[in-house]
Every structure is written in structure tokens, then in C-alpha cells.
Image (cartoon, rainbow, N blue to C red; front, side, top):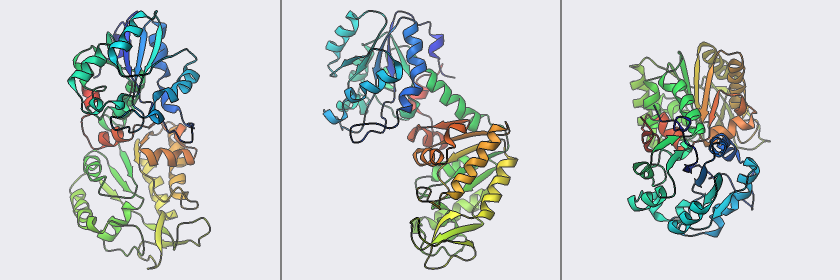
Length: 395
């Protein structure tokens, strides 16, 4: 169990607050500041208790070099807009200078430190840099689950020098993930989609030990179908992973887990909106066609599984969702999961970049029990790995 910021009795102190402000940004603007908005509860809580708050974060990949295009100053207006308060920008990582400005400010005040990754010492988890960051405050609060799979100075190293606590967003994320996999209501179904088995072997291995139904979708299902001897035409596949897929199929047979693959498929000879589509049994995929979505029989099978399940974990789309009509499978299953969630019959937790995009496209993301934007941290959690930034907050 992690230590919680509301239990720290923190008043009139200086709190170093790790957020993830690495929001989508292009052409001089961001169309998605949800990560900032989700951290609002922690920041407002600290301000109401008359604390100084020093926000630290990274932005992009500057590789240890100063890059004005990746300055956190760019995000200042979004923070002010989300919080409705004044924020003082600290324009360098010269910690001694920043400390003087923070110390001289009244309670409460909010600061934003420049991009941590302008120093290579951040990703190196340098003890010296960790100590300097810690010198900015009295208490450390991590509200950035999405970067807590990294053992960096601002996520792990700093916790060696300050009393360390989890913010409200971190707590919410951990509670949702615990409900989904650590202490789930059973039966549990997991949907794992996307394009490559090679990036998800550890996820498949971990989930197959913990769930009742392991549903494979997306292009990675093609490799499993090929491993079972089905023809897959011109479909995207990982030839070098076919033997691995055969091994996974055999291994899952020995577990209390049902491996679920497509029963029927939607095919086309090209990936575009105007192409002619064919719905076929997996026994027959035309040699000149690509598998681009699951068919209606498969959708019915997955809906039946969801109806039997109490918990659903979802990572990865079921088809080429970016292009209609190959988003039908993903959209229909997402909407069915939403209905079961609304009825109080299902705990639904999803995460991963493509998954979030697919659920947003189907207008389902806000209706799941929880949708994680954590990316790499969510994937490592699915793999059963411990996360350094979370471990550092435990009692």
C-alpha cells in the first residue's frame, strides 16, 4: 500500500510535485490537456492547505540538451487555464537559484520548474541531481503513474531524500488497476490487440495466469491464426513469431484460461474507406486479401464472454480502427462493454495509446470504469512488473 498525500498532514510546507505534463503538442498547440486536468485535485488540495507547490515534469525527448521547443514554458498557459491560478515559471535547472526564489515566495505559491530532461542526469537517476531536486522542498508527492515505470531522479531517486507520498491521481490509477488484476471480480476477460506479438509476449504470459478468457485481436491475431494452420492471405503478420505463437497456444492449454481467436474476419485488398470488403470464415481468407477486422460471429462470441465476465481488461484494438469500416469490431465490442458497465455488471479497465484512441473514436472512453493514459507504465503493469516510482511510495 502506498503512502497517501492526504495522510501526510502537509500544511505550510513546500511540496515537490511530480506530474506528467508530456501532453500531445504540435503546430504550437495541444488539443488534449486531460493529463493536466486529472492532476488538478492534488494541486488544489495542496494549495488549500497553504503549501508552496513546485511542479516538476518532463516534456518530449530533448536528450539532456536545452531545446526551447520543448520548454515547459509552452505549457504554462494550459496549467493556468486548468487550475485558474497564477503559476511562477522557473526557467532553468540551476537548482540553487530556483530554491532562493521558492524560499522567498509567500504561502501558498505554485511554481513550474523547467523540463527535467534538459539534464541528462534526470534519466541517469543521478544521486546528485536527485538530492538537488529534493532540496527544493520538504515533502515529495508523485502524481505521475504514467512515468513511474522509470527509475529516474524525479520518480525514484528523490524519494531517498524526502518523505514521499502518492497524489490523488496516482491513488485512483492504482485502485483501478488493483480492481482489474490484483483483486478482481471473476470471471475476468482480457482483450489484447494491436499489431505485434513480439511486444506483448510478457503481457500474454502474465495475463494467461490470471484471467479466465484471453481474447486476441488486431493484426497479432493473424500470427496466431497462421500458427494454427489457417491461411491469412496478404495480412500483416510476424513470420518469425509463428513458432512462438504455437508455443503460447500450447502453454495456455495447460492453464485455467480460454484462448479466444477470431471465428470470422473482414477482409479487403487495400486499407481505405472505399475498398470492397468481404466477411469470411477463418477457414477461407482469399490469397489477395488482408484481414482488417473481426467479423459478426466473433463479435457475438466476444459479447457473450463479456456478458459472462465481471471484469474486463483491454489493451489494443481489434482491427484497423483508424479507417472505417474496419473500426466496427472495436466499436461494437467497446459499446457492449460500456452497456454492461453502465448496468453495474462489469468493471472495465483499459489502457495503452492505441486503445485510448480507439475508445475515444467510439465515444466509449469516458464510460469505462477506468481508462489509463499511462502508456508504458500500464503495459509494464500488465506484464506483472514492479514499477520503481510506485515501489518507492510504499509503506
